[in-house]
Image (cartoon, rainbow, N blue to C red):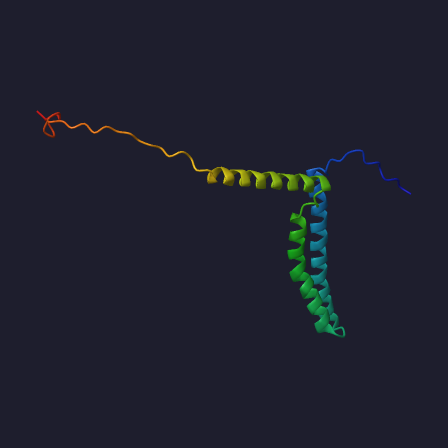
Length: 133
C-alpha cells in the first residue's frame, strides 16, 4: 500500500496543479460526450429496444456535458477556513470604514463667512479700461 506524504504546510496547491486537475476533468467530460455521440450512432444501427429513451439520454449527455465541463473547468478550489476568515475580516473593516465616513459626513462644518467692504467711487465706469489705438 502506498503511503500518503505528510502535509507540512498550509499553502494552497499551486496554480499549475489546479489547472492540470481542471484540464483532466474537462477532457474526461468531453470524452464522455464523444462516447454519447458514438453510442447514439451504434444504437441507431442496432435498433435496440427502447431506442427513443436511449437516444434521449445520449442527446442529453451531448448537450449538458459541455456546459457542465466548462463550469467545472473554470471553478476554483473552495476557500480554506483561513481565507474565509480573512475575507470576513476585510468585509468587517470595510463596513466600519463606511460607518465612520457616514458619521464624519453628518457633522456639520462651521459655516464660511465672507466679509467684504463695498467701496464707492466717483469715477465713471470704464475710465480705467484701455482703448484700442
